[in-house]
Image 1 (cartoon, rainbow, N blue to C red):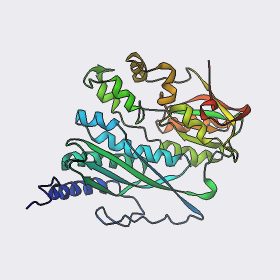
Image 2 (image 1 turned 60 degrees about the horizontal axis):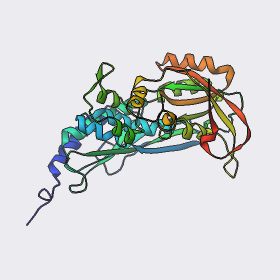
Image 3 (image 1 turned 90 degrees about the vertical axis):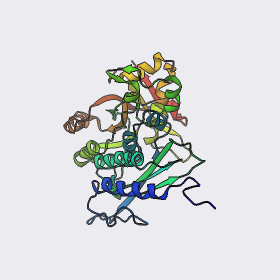
Image 4 (image 1 turned 120 degrees about the vertical axis):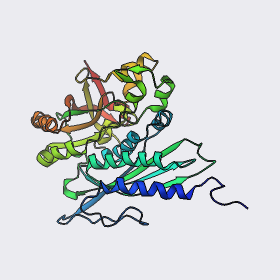
Length: 348
């Protein structure tokens, strides 16, 4: 006869992990939370006073950056990445994140390791002002190798319908403000792992593994501060994730019924400081002509704003410890464009 533990699932370790999770989740509690961690479902009350609330959701994972975390046995920073990838997407609409739920999967559960993941998730929730409302831990022996973990999650935000930022006000002459990234963030790691095999090698005063594990910047607080003062002047926003500049910046532009756009982004080269890690990846063999198709290159979030307000918005971002730069402008295209890669042009 065989029981669940002998099949590879340790229920007691799961109980231990949940106990640790609860302590982390308590740190994220905000007004609106109606249930504690451990219930079958999380409940959150719609904030009072909203006239026409719209719920906004986003979901994502951390990708193969997790392979570096597992190799270095450093698990908390990727929890921040997990939150950042969803809440930054939600933020592109102008919405305020309310709550987040995570999903952790592994071959053999270690409560201490899983707790480190959830600590990072909780840190990310605190940084974005939302609550960790619930989650799931799946132990799947024989499916995941022992020592390997995966983490994903989704967030939910809210916004008044009339305040949604959807790009329909973007026009030629708008200024593009780029918000600095903290490094590679959470995209392009299948390429990174081809280029970097020894994560202990020194780089920029740390190991290159530590630099690569720097968590994705969460832009919620500085951007919401800008929207509080200048919402009418912010015409579009975009999170620079997989696909880099070319695939992401055009996503905020309006298009016709057939998907054609009439606006392009003109990006000024050398208008911001590109983190050293990207130059290092080029030295190790990354194609320099494809870097802006793959990575954020030091700009993790872009705002299309009214030109006359650009300086004020940059000043407001600085008040919230967010470095930002005028990186370009919006122009009308001479012809309608369908391919996103044609909607981004670099100039000296």
